[in-house]
Image (cartoon, rainbow, N blue to C red; front, side, top):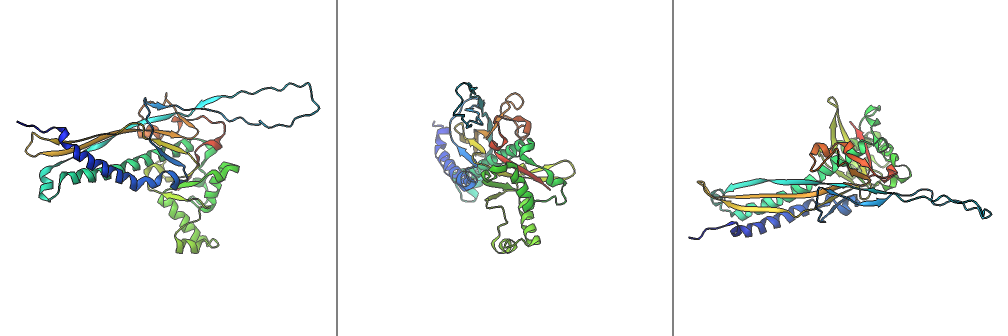
Length: 328
C-alpha cells in the first residue's frame, strides 16, 4: 500500500515561496533608497546570538599648526582605539495556519491557493515586524540619550508637533542637521503638522498643504505609520515619537535561512493542510551596541524597547542614528 509523505507537498512549498516573495516586494518601499538608505535590509548568514563588527573610533584634532622654526619639541602621538558595533539576533516564527481540504472543495478552490495567499500575508507581515521592531529600538535608544532627545515639546505652550518644534529637534544635530535624511512619524503627528500649516497660514505652505497634500518637513521625505512603536504613555498622557534618521541608522539582516513546513494532516474526520515557518534576523543600530549582559540573547520586544539595553560605542552623538522628538 502506498502512503503519501511530506514530499508529496513540495508543490505547495513553491506556492508559498511565490506568495511570500510577492508579499515582501509590496512592503520593501520602507527600506533602502526610499528611506534615503537610513533603514537597510540585508541578507548575510550569521551564526550565534550576536553579530560583532569592530571599528576604529574617530580621532579628532589631527590637523594642527606646524611651527617651522621649532626643531626641539617632541610631539605626543595618539593611538587608535577600537569599539564593537554589536547586533542582536531575534528568532521568530509564523503562527501555524491550518484548514480542512473539504473547506476548499466546497468553494471550488485548491489548497495550493491557500498556501500562496498565506505566503503573501506572511511576507507582508514579516516586513511589518521588521519595521515595528526597528522603530521601537531606534525610538527608545535615542530617547535614552539626552543629546539626541527633544522632549521639551510635551512641556511647551504648544505640545503638538509644529514646524518650529520639528526644526528645534533637528538642531540637536548641530552642524550636521543636514545628515538627517528621513523622517518617521505617527499619522497623528503628521496631521498636526498639516493643521498647523493651515492655521498659521505659513507663506506658500497652507495652499500647498490643501492642494498638494504635503506638509513642510524641510525637504525631507516622511514615512507615516501608526505603529505602536512610536506611541508611549506615562499613564496619563499619550505621546508620540518622531524619528529623524541618518544614513545607515539601522540594519535588519536576514541572518538565517527560513524553515517552511507545508504538510497534510491525517487521522481525523477531515484531511487538513497546515503551514508553519520560522526565521531569524539580526538588528543593528548605528553607533550603538546591544548590551549582551542586560539585554541577553533572543530578547523580548520589551527588552528591545529598553533604551538602556543599547550602549553608545561612538565618541560623538552626531554619529548615532539621528534624533527623536516627543510630542503630544
